[in-house]
Length: 294
Picture 1 (cartoon, rainbow, N blue to C red):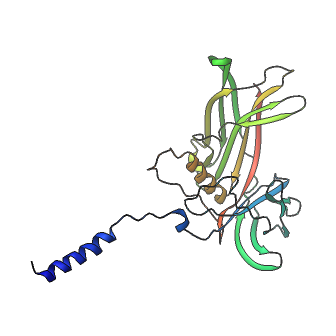
Picture 2 (cartoon, helix red, strand yellow):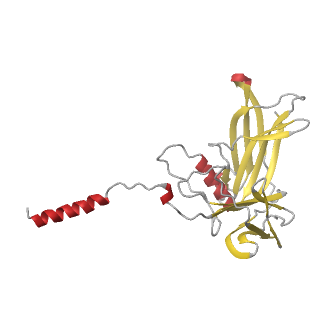
Picture 3 (cartoon, rainbow, N blue to C red):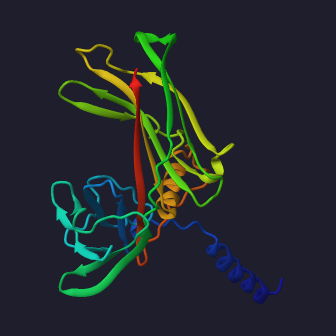
């Protein structure tokens, strides 16, 4: 072979094979700028409105409570119903709070949330709008009964629960439904939600209706108080009609939580409607219904 051709072949091989070598990139090499993350949900039944403000975590970095990049000196303004006011940061709860009387949350009304850098600087960092659903009185029906036919170890029983409410079969109606057990004593009460665990249904649209009704049934372990001295237990249902923003966020969050483990599962991106940042600003109308004592 011609010595010149041998030299050229060796040069091409060195460049070509060298370009295919494995290159490891560490987390410090991936330095995307953080983004503002805003979270706020409004509802006419809330006596206090809350909002969170933070910076996003760097890509591939696991976050935890210690690494939470909370922002305590931001300015969050809520506008709507002819009113405007600013959230105040609560250092104990680590979020922003605003009495609902400052900006009344009214059904079928539109609100705007704006985030500024400082009170003396009008630089708008992020904003979002949402509309509270119209006020409706859903005819929620609940059937709950204790099932002792197949007791589990430690004498635990089960509750058979059926929840249903009428709705037109249209995709423009959005719901979140939580159910659980409410325990009451002479001095206190507490609610344990059942379907906030992975695999349990939470969000629905009008297209989930059958014959004009959305129906949800479940059978779960009963850990109730069974005497007048120990207290009473009933089933409780919280039904929220939400706007599209809250629904899409909650639906994506539910799908992300229910994602099965494994390295080859497709990721689920959370919905965001925050202009200039990430997060969700949504609205809902809340109704509660309680069963007879179990």
